Image (cartoon, rainbow, N blue to C red; front, side, top):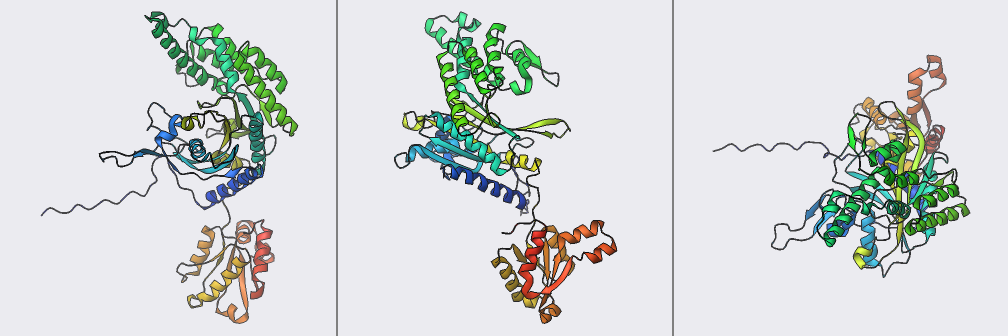
Length: 522
């Protein structure tokens, strides 16, 4: 009889591209999201918690790869082996596509405009890398059903208030605004569809020629958009090279150019270098860049309206500025686009100084609900990268990677557990975070080691002698650690880290110690 093969143990490791979040990180994220929600709520936005799973069909154009609808998302088919397989389902890729479905499904019951915010994890089945995970948090706010530029101005003002509410000081950030209509006007001026591309000349019929012209236009427009998006990294010279003959990158590798002629590139460069000393100068330069384009002029007028509305609320160019270099790569943006950039310097892993960069982005996407209803519904919104914003706050020293644990009540006599539970209930009832040690109480030293691992600020000790005398020992663990590091014997005697107090003074003494170390109470 063959020997049964032993089932191997599963590996205790997170899947590739995922990670676990522990106490301090979870607490910090929760507190920051509460601060953000407070700002959104103050602006009149309502919370929405939509399903984490959507049909692939509902995700539609919001998928990372429209031509391969199940690529880039975590998707599966219901009853795949059945005679009639079910729908393809996927974990949500972002929080925008679910909003489109929710609004279309419930539009008769929702107010118009509908103003909602949503916070939660999203999943992307993409190649992970340093700081790039397949699951991460987003924090969105959107207005659906308003074509007014006041909705876009409000989103930008709210984003400014949000950054300051979580601890990004004024002067450490800037919100940059552009308009895809302006960019479309620039592309229109380039007349990409009329280029003498060989495939166009060789087409053997007018209908075929028109199809090829359209294909060429799409290919070149996408290439131009991708190149414009690199302006911040490669500058004006780099963009010119990438749009024409190509360039070498920092590693020395050659990157092929788009193949445009120099005269075709001129409108793009004029557009990218349109930023003036103030918003009005920028708008004048953009007007020259779009020339006679009607769609470009419409975009400039929308930017002018937004700037005027923001100025009326006190949001000047020190916080929010018009900047033509903002492109936003997502294909569904139809009007104003905006990006929040942190301007302070940090050092990368190689010790090089660089700016922190973008932590939020968004814009207007008026085709949001049209796929479901056939009717155009205007919409605009913003998405904050939660993990990046948390990283920025740590860089600024606004929050630290550690937090203080609970007060730990040690167990000197396991038969008196009821006494210790009564003590912890009293502390909790006073709003203090506390716990009773629930491990093996035999070794008292292990109990203090446990308190150290929890980063606890205080330990409470009550043996039989203390119980008989109606007192407890209160050990200030933070002070004890400080004394152990640098205090002399005389200083140690003058600054005892453990004191004996009447049992009735326990809550007051713990509060005093926590306040002395600047620790907030729950």
